[in-house]
Amino acid sequence: MGKDYYKILGVDKGANEADVKKAFRKLAHQYHPDKTTGDVDKFKEINEAYQVLGNQEKRQQYDQFGTTFDGAQGFGGGNPFAQGFGGAQNVDFDLGDIFSSFFNGGGPTGNTRSQRGSDIEVDLEISLKEAVFGISQTVSIRKQNSCEPCHGTGADKGTAYDECKTCGGSGKVTTTVMGTFRTQTVCPDCRGKGKTIKDKCGACSGQGVITENADIKAEIPAGIDEGQAIRLAGQGNAGKNGSAAGDLYINIHVKPEAGFERQGFDLVTEYDVPFTMTALGGDIKVKTIDGQVKLKIPAGTPSGKKFILKDKGVTHLKSRGRGDQIVIINVDVPTKLSKKQKKLLEELNEELIKDKKSWF
Ligand SMILES: [Zn+2]
Ligand SMILES: [Zn+2]
Image (cartoon, rainbow, N blue to C red; front, top):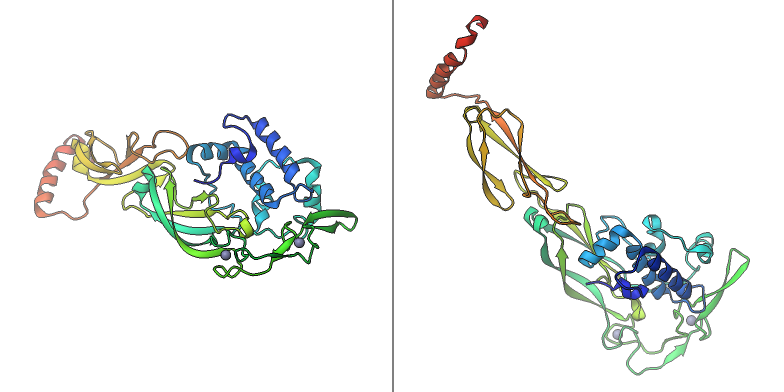
């Protein structure tokens, strides 16, 4: 599932923070779109990999689940740089001077239009039990796949290409940054290929992508909560001309379960127990997410007393073990009494107030 970020950065799984950073810097310099060795897609991919591997929490999630849970935020949208730059608020972006033109020059290399596929967002409703234990779920989406007949190029099989008019076939254009520096960037029209399509592929009308139904299997990790999202890297719309695909975001909605309230990784349930039983003590059957269990209520239990059912809560999302179920016992005082109940209570009442006669 997703991309191999370690492979992208060329580090092994045991690499420490410094190694990851070093590898990222080296590759970022090499593939920076402003350099002659530049490659927007590679550069973007490297950024994506570093956003995860350079962040301890995300790296842990990635190691464990093959993906990260970015919450509801962090959607890159169609902008290829949203992930690398717009989404950089939570990334350690210590790149040195090479990026100064990016940040000061008013945007990514002026006019380089990446054809990275756009992200797709879907909503998925799961039950509380599925949130507690995790589930493999297939989501059906409409997505753009790379066109097979033309291999995503958009060019009819065997047809020739024309030289790109924008760059004259060089694949590079010279732009002026901040009115002073002249800088070479990848040609926005041919994306550095130096050529444009002569005859369009009939299957995709030259788009390089075809919209199809897709069933995508996702592992919803145990412990996930309402409003969280799962990102499946590269499962979004295919990029054009072989550019990287977008990502698929699955927004999780947890159906409320009657009687259960989630608090962090604990589940809270409440029971109204007749005051006679809390006075005398007894067993009640309590619903847990694993099934029914017996709860012993000791004699003389006061209202609001909390009982803890160990490990009956929600599975911890990023570690082992589960939260607890908290059972709150409310003492239920009847408001309507039958004749028989009233008679019995009057008898009991006489007994209970015997020692306090002076009060009445
Ligand atoms: Zn095609
Ligand atoms: Zn060109």
